[in-house]
Image (cartoon, rainbow, N blue to C red; front, side):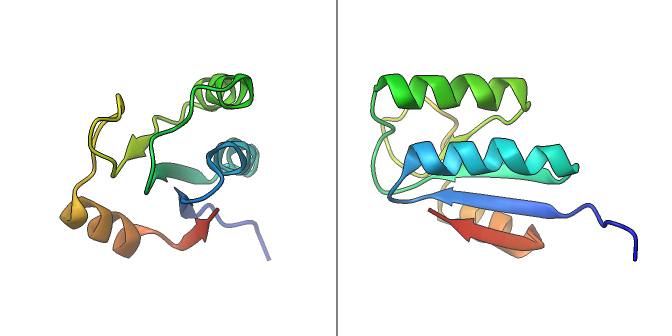
Length: 92
């Protein structure tokens, strides 16, 4: 059975760094990955900065549901659409 490219939505709910790491790793398999941060702003830590660099290399443009975040904001309708469009959803 051949590998099938999937559309995967990664939700960064509690561990933003882990969500970024997994999202970047999933692109190795050719999957289309979308990353959405939720609940809190992404903390300005060395670990998060390193993972954000990985996202850039993996060509993932993260989004956020959090007001005031410097990322493109996804409202509840946009999040619902993203959830429906994904073949798989991973939450961290």
